Amino acid sequence: MSAIPQYPVLWGDALDHYLGQGYYRMQQDLFTCQFLPVEGELYTVHWLRLVLPQVQFGAEQRRLFRLNQPFVVSIRPFQLTEEYEALYAHYRASTNFDAPSTIESFLFDGAKQNIFTTSIIEVRDGARLIAGGIFDSGRRTLAGIMNFYDPAYRRHSLGKYLMLLKIEYALSQQLDYYYPGYLVHDYPKFDYKLFACREATEVFDCVNRYWLPFSWPEVARQSAELMAGWQNEEADSDDLASAGD
Image (spheres, rainbow, N blue to C red):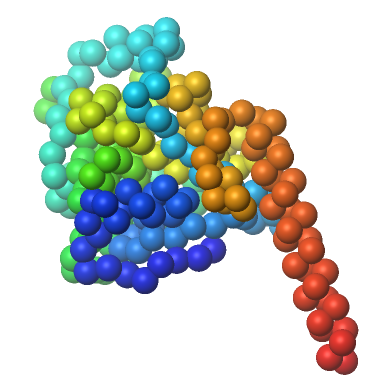
């Protein structure tokens, strides 16, 4: 994992630039990584973005909009509240994701200032908050940071719905790119990030530093290249260690 120096404020153009280089928010900093260790196995990480002018919602996405039409959706600048924390705690208790214990620790970790321009999408069933989707805005980009929802509404696929709402908002603002984070080769837990529109999705080639149309063969190619590079580095490290004995 690598990170960039912390900024007092991360202006829109700067966030656009770093998202385009495969960086992403971690609390009040930006980071990137190419590998994810899981239960003793090493997997490769592949950063994604959607080219917003190319997004077209299909039948499955339109069905989800219809299913959730009775709910009230609002978007506002993010301010941490007890209501959000209570819903997040309820959501976290129902999942098997290794996630921070609170929204505060996820976004701030004790920091007193938010260097990002952060907003939240609220979804309510009447007055009851049932889902929240947090995102950061750049000048031409939007990055989806976290979603949480009431597990009693699981059949409504509120996590995917929030992703669609973020994209819909980004389209209304005539932005260029939506960044949902990464997926992991041969580890399908993150594949839901392809739900919105696979045809508009690009994957970042972190070795050659450019974006390519998403496909599983392209992800496999990048994964093989990353693993070969890692194995070569490990072999070089072993050789250096042996030379020092």
